[in-house]
Length: 126
Image 1 (cartoon, rainbow, N blue to C red):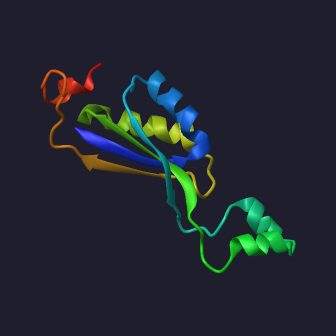
Image 2: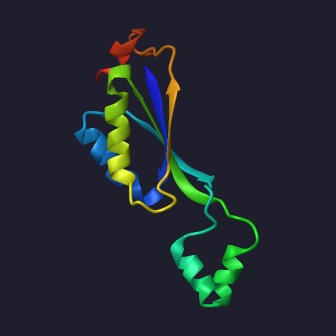
C-alpha cells in the first residue's frame, strides 16, 4: 500500500475530488487549509503589478516569498493503483504554470478498518 500525498491549489479541490471518484478512488482525506511555497515568489497578477510599479503589488510582494494557502490531499491505494491515482491527480491539476502542486508517495505498512478490525488491502475496498 502507498499513501499518495498531494499539495494542490485550493480552487482545484472539487475538480480533483470528481476526477478521483470517476477513476474509482472514492476514499480520501483532505485538510482544510495548509500553507506553503515553492521556488516562485508570487502569482502572475502580483508580478505584473510589480512590473507596472503599482504600490499595492510592491507591498504584497515584499522581500520574502509569502506562504500560499493550499489543500493537502491524501489517498491510500494498493500498490498496483499508484500510477493511476497519480495520473488522475496530475490531469486534474496540471496547468503547466508554476504552483500546480507536488505529489509525494509514501509507504503504508498496514491499514486496519476500525469497525471490523480487518487489515491489509481489503480495507481499501468500499
